Image 1 (cartoon, rainbow, N blue to C red):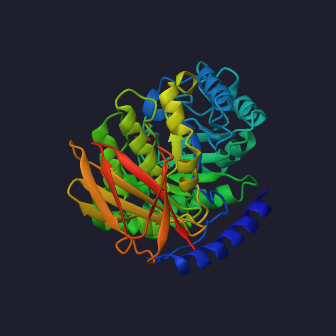
Image 2 (image 1 turned 60 degrees about the vertical axis):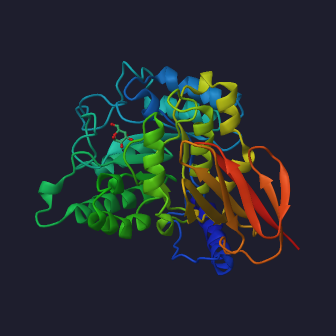
Length: 409
Ligand code: GLA
């Protein structure tokens, strides 16, 4: 499994180099440090919707719903358990144990259940002394905890950074300490004998501190498969917008196997209108972000399910070239983004942040495209149009118009 991934990784890396030569704005790129997560992870994480109100039942029901709705088939395979799954203390042998009240059959059983459904098993820990909710952290127990996770069949580890062990590293700054600790866990995961995707949180803790943020971003891709770039998302438009604004300029750090993570999807929750949910989904796909659903999957409305099931938008997110969109232009309240795709197409978004319907336009030249005739596929209405000069559209408040552009020979 591991071997196959590495081969695929090599192939994608070659494609990447080829793709880069074609891309209008080449970025410095690297490969997946462990051969995993060659496209952004997709699945479920409970935190944004449930916080600590979790149970074995929730994850079993979510797994069943992912399969029954067809979402699993579309790529939503990781079922990730966030904070609060652990008992308050390690057991007598020093091992992490699940909270038996919440998870009566334990984590090994749950992992096996997910695997039997064709899904993947993700779990949460913290690199410091304690998790953000005060459960035992991994620091001082790295090898044994990674062994525990591997023995449970864990496929994905989200490692948070509350309570960092700074006092053990006098004279070192936030970035240096985080680098040492995360690199150690990263090595342990790689040598665990299991393919475990590594999701890291340090950048989010220095968001808004440009110097430290830059330092963390300089090493994160050599140690992690994805990393949180912003504050915790919550079910409100202003939070989605803030995380978009924070993440949209970070494309140069993203690459297959190393993704910027602006946090979970709020699709399906009540704080956003359906249009805003469609917008978040489109923007996250355009930014090659992980697509982690955080809602009651068993009770998704038809409208929310339709958003999450848009295969054409998912294909943009999962494009193997793995180039995050660039912000091409800001015109009034409209942001225009574009990303090149592996077959030579481009995914373009016109995003209206404002409160009024607005007309926006961008020329092929501004998009960095060769002159010629292009077919425009609207990825939400499915309408096809053609252009040889510019893209122009009316964009509703908090809405997007998203196209896939194909050059006609
Ligand atoms: C932090 C993380 C969240 C979530 C909580 C759990 O706030 O950023 O995503 O994992 O901790 O306590």
